[in-house]
Image (cartoon, rainbow, N blue to C red; front, top):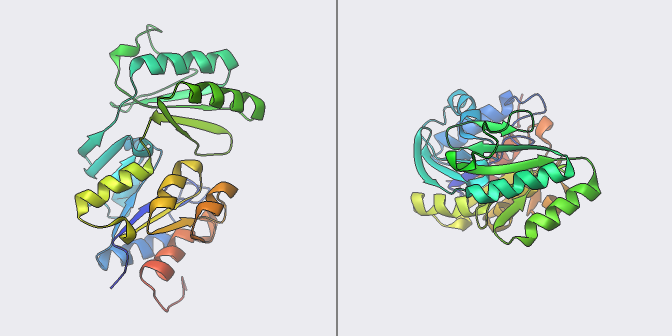
Length: 257
């Protein structure tokens, strides 16, 4: 029987390869783990609607999932357990900050809409007309990104991470994949020591630190690798499958043949 009862998987750069696909070995070992009684779930920065096709593909329609970096926790797909919102005033300030530095930006709402630099609110100040989950911005200019980080951090009401080296993602302070993992443990009646968290970016790092086993992908950002207990193969080399085979199921069989 596995020591671990819950495996929380990031999606992009982790479970999905660079073509945004779940490889055959990864799908196989997810199925094997679930058949062994392990809860395998997604814990992602993606919005809810961007996850559903993958949960259906992998037969994960009966397990919890975490979306928008912990902003939403689902008992199972279509059944919301908990939601944490950004207030409209904060979205207004983030929007102004992104405009100030002329960077690409986007924002998720609870009804599944994603607003961005090309498609913003109509009217432009209708912030209170929506329920906001997450704001993000992207730039390859390190100095600009650092300036945005410093200014947004100074407000004291945001949890700021990233899902790539070039972006920043903002959730309400205290909301993260780690806080969601703790909530999942409470829901399932298990301990954090019985969890595995796998990821590649800074939005995964808190969960990787707090999980019983924290795993970084070989393609992960260096800070994530330093925080992890182990580093597995890359997302293009079936790293998630290897985690499930080696550390969760402890199977003495090849990864794939």
